[in-house]
Image (tube, rainbow, N blue to C red; front, side, top):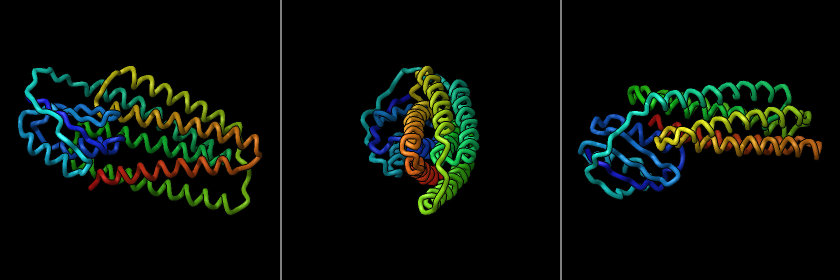
Length: 263
């Protein structure tokens, strides 16, 4: 078995990782893909066929470079079962909080909570795609990716329209108490997800991708909390609308990347 290490300059989020995994899914020579997203490194354990594997990666135009390739006696351990359990856990937590934040966001008239709920939903899709990457046909994965991407895009566009409507029309000031309390609960939930993912100490693509997205969620949750405090201090709806718009930008960016998976 050979061990080939690639440096991939544009691999900086779960979408690129998923695109690479789907691209290489049909190569039976590949025993394992080991991603190190923070360092933009991909290690491929395979039985020959390096040229075809390298050509497939190059087609994605992620500025890849083959660092090294040599025979190895390393034992490839199948961590699929533990990964599935971990990903199911963080997926369910995110989906539950999507429902909680969407409901409380509508009741409290907070665009920040509504936007954050859509970000939670977007993350759930990413985790679901990571689970599908463990098995299943490439065609099925691409169809699901398209559906997920378009769904997120539609939700984000509707959210932007609502933000613009509230900016241009007189609307009620959101309930800052609900904003702060629910965002603190979401922050705790994402902190738990991050702890579980880090505890696994896995360098596999799915786990690294999940850690990056969950870390971003912690930042977004903190932003909604700050917006709630600013709503209290200024007695204005503007901080809530600003944070809502910022999160919708993140959701749209994610949906565009996911749609690339379906090509």
